[in-house]
Amino acid sequence: ATFFADASADPNMLYQIVAQGHELGNHTYSHEFSTYLTIEEFTNDLNAMDSIIQDATGVSSRPLFRPPYGDYDASVLETAGSLGYDYTIGWSADSLDWVGTYSPSEIAENVLNNLIPGAIFLMHAVPESANTPASLFEIVTEARALGYEFTTVGALLGLSSNSGEDPATETPIVVVEEEFTIPELEQFADGTNPIITRGDVTDFAYAFGAADPFIVYDGETYHMFFEVLGEY
Image (cartoon, rainbow, N blue to C red; front, side):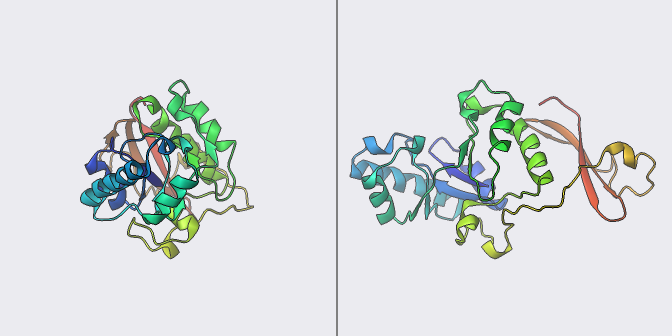
């Protein structure tokens, strides 16, 4: 994924984003409407945020910029470009998770109804988007079942990613024609060869709940499941 950060971002989280192979872009320091700022104010806004990102991660947010609220004009694009932000990134579809009233399933539906190869979806990590983590379980599961994979904006554009990964090794978004069916747990009920079973792995607890992972092998494919232990 690609995360566009502003000054509200926790520096430790920025570090973790890059360390885990994701990508960072600049969302300005102030998150003000970019067209409301003078060229000097906008320049300072971008530079201040990039300094925070570099201090936290050791990498720059260049060349990716996303204007807050999707607000830009010719002056914003020219100024951003002069500062090394050659790509101003919008989105294909808005998940509307920022509204604060949508359930996880409704957020997921806003994404899944707009799946196309190369699509960019707008999602947030703000207090109003508390249902976003839970929605991602449905989004990732359903999208992958349809043959889609997830990648960074930089990889879509064929750029060198600030995640530290070689774009050539990152997974492109593709669609496969062969239908994939998610197996039911019942078909493994009498199996004798679970590679990792319930209890073999320490339970993992996060802000969105707790899950106990286990893996089974059906002779051709490894399947990973997460038994939910806590509420989202």
